[in-house]
Length: 372
Image (cartoon, rainbow, N blue to C red):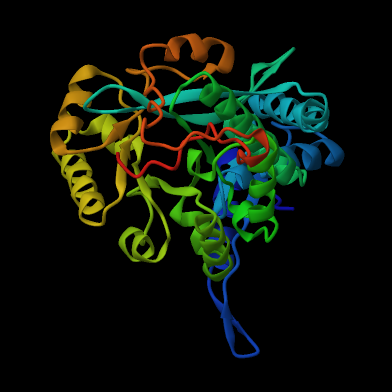
């Protein structure tokens, strides 16, 4: 409660001053601690003329500030009411959407930059709400995390991806699928067994699954994350570092993580033709990845010129709207014809298995490819 404000802007200034004061470290039992805060500000009579209304609207503004991260203050505005109402409604419906199969998974193809053949597809969650239309994926993940549904959402995307990959394999498409892992997944001790179960149920070789992580996720709890990642690597899962180049410790963590791929963040790729610094960053990441024996994937390729420049640099793979937007499986499957890398023909020197009882399960699955 701050009386005698000259205007709403002064209320925002008070909140900023409080954030600065709270951000000063302080000692407790010999430990130096810091506090982050998010403030919502509502000022009467502009935003209401009674205490209940002002508190409600300050609360709406505060949740908007929280969504932006620690150390921010948000002044109430009428637009926030619509956004807050929408978020509350979506929060109440996402559980039903998960339980009743109203969410979908789309796939964005990833191709070899030299041959143009599609070698993989990234699984991306989608939700088309009957009233609000397409819900942005970050909103879906944020809502699931807030409501304790993130594990259920991750398993839904994982299950959909590996089953679709098995279907493509049966259609002679030699493609992997990649699934993004949220930070919470990397401290889930049951993740390895969950992945093994889904692969087993789908009859899919572990080498066909790529799990994408970011450095920020690992930094939250590096010891536990490394344990989970090593467990995934040991069963043959391909691991990729997503948004590479945007973290604070790229090189140090890259040497510790059991990763097979590096994905260059789209912000560098999008600007590499017009910004010399971005081009140098991209080239450096490609050279670093090649020197470490990692597959390098460029995200966000929007045009043929960028594609050709990346190929000339030695980048291995690329994805983006130049190749294809994310598509559902029904649309992507016919698109793959002629574009996807076909399964290799069986070797004529391979022994013929004549007895069904001697045939190993899912013997039609190829061994994991090591050539890129």
